[in-house]
Length: 165
Image (cartoon, rainbow, N blue to C red; front, side, top):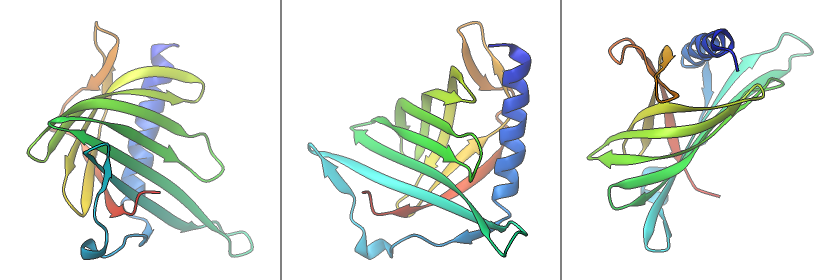
């Protein structure tokens, strides 16, 4: 996989996700008092979703992109999935493992997008009713992991908690 393709893909994702946070959101969340976390073998599983909706301009159709984040807690260790599924476009599927300290999560994700597979940093803030995902330009480090170029220069996407299915 060429570095230029990855840099271009990362830049496009940053732009798209930045635009998504300004799009009209469809509220798929359940009131917090009615959505207890699921327990998985004595551990906690939480699910988050953001569906953005935009007019396509053709026959009054709507375009919906879905961003899905599922996380399981094992003490301060976490694992889960983070998927971006755009309408009629390529998708990005990631599984991650990491650590959660208080509400701050750091993980390494194994991601697949546009026929490429790579490892990348994933930073997030986990709360009961939302998860905030950080996006930003990434550079490939000597260990082969794509890391944030400047953690102080990132954008965010907020996903609302939903029932796990």
